[in-house]
Length: 50
Image (tube, rainbow, N blue to C red; front, side):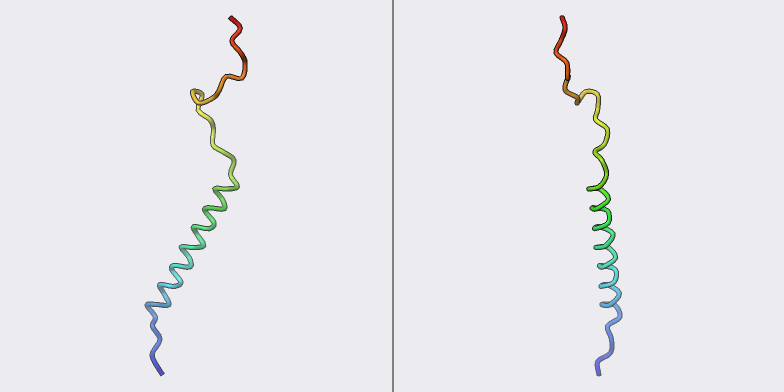
């Protein structure tokens, strides 16, 4: 019977943790509302009254 490859098993667990963390971060980013809009980036909603 071959001996277990513990380094491979550890690497697989680390990759799974990394994948779960990335998925969680992506889900959190997609559920957050958009960040504040810079004042210079806003389009004027009213026409000039001059």
